[in-house]
Amino acid sequence: MKEQLVKVFKEKFGSEGDIRSYFAPGRVNLIGEHTDYNGGHVFPCALTIGTYAIVRKREDRNFRFYSTNFESLGVIEASLDNLKYDKALDWTNYPLGVVWAFIEKGYPVDCGFDMLLFGNIPNGSGLSSSASVEVVTGVALRDLFGYDDISMIDIALFGQYSENNFNGVNCGIMDQFAIAMGKKDQAIFLDTSDLSYTYAPIKLADEKIVIACSNKKRGLGDSKYNERRAECEEALAELQTKLDIKALGELSEEEFEANKDLIKSEVRQRRAKHAVYENQRTLKAVDALKAGNLEEFGKLMNASHVSLRDDYEVTGIELDTLVENAWEQEGVIGSRMTGAGFGGCTVSIVKTDCVDKFIENVGKAYLEKIGYAADFYVVEIGDGGRVLA
Image 1 (cartoon, rainbow, N blue to C red):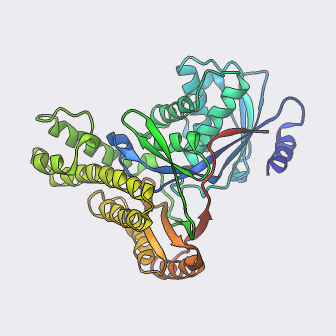
Image 2: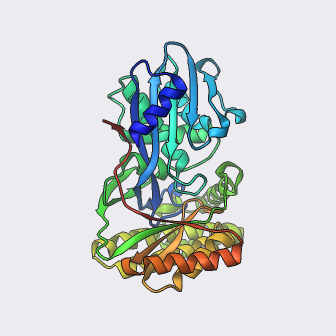
Image 3: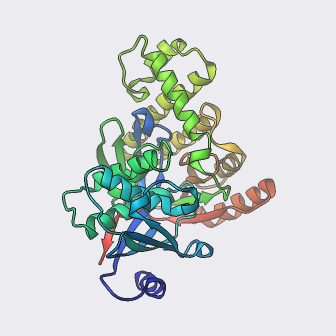
């Protein structure tokens, strides 16, 4: 793959100079959705699919970008001297945002670069193609400009900072963290309140992780994502009139139930309930996995989807159709939407010998109900962002 992309890079930008290669994965969150900006726990893992970047520094202050995923856009040009979000710059706002974040954080970028990108993450799927681009850009900048004191956690934080403040999406830290810090065959149990984390082995002897992409495209910035976040912030402020807490993730289910009437809107009560209960489900799910109880893990995945559907209202007919049909299939341990919702993907744990039938049956039911096809991916858990030798 790398050699093929370097060849395309040379065709587009010339073959001279020091051309370097980088990779950052996509991610899937197994459980713990919409908890990361509520100070709760998440349980994502990096995938083996992701974003490849071929990069070479320039001697001037210009950028040239090309993506083999968006060939019709051609080469997009930008400048260090006009580093601000511009809708006309399309996908390049993500790498440009990371350049901006590096500079804001005190790490000068004193020249431009040429960058070719290729991603095999379905675009707009909810597997974090944007965060993957941010992390691969951060890895490249650290390497190209010799910033060895920048950690992979820093790269994750810079990516989140750029998405919040350059691209205007109030995302939490989970996506960038999982992509930067991923480890093969392990999920990351991350406390988003303080970024403490441990790795937990995912031991699937006779099961596979199957991603179903709804192919309903969504844009986080113009979706209801920011609205949900605002609803949770308002609910938290209402609870803080009595409780000494900094985040919804600090509450147990019992503490929430005892104090929920402080939240004056029934809608905000449901939003906050999801944040609290989903965090507790995540804690229980990791314990179940450590105890080797995959069946319990699956039940908690299912309960997570119900809460996202009913209390948080971020699923929609496409994701509900995929999940509810998955629940009916033989060999399914658990299934839920993953990512921000409003389209995107589901994640299911399926017995290996039932995977083909699962894909056939769920795919057929989805096509019949929605009118267009879903795509299915049997995925492996891989390492985080890195320089390619």
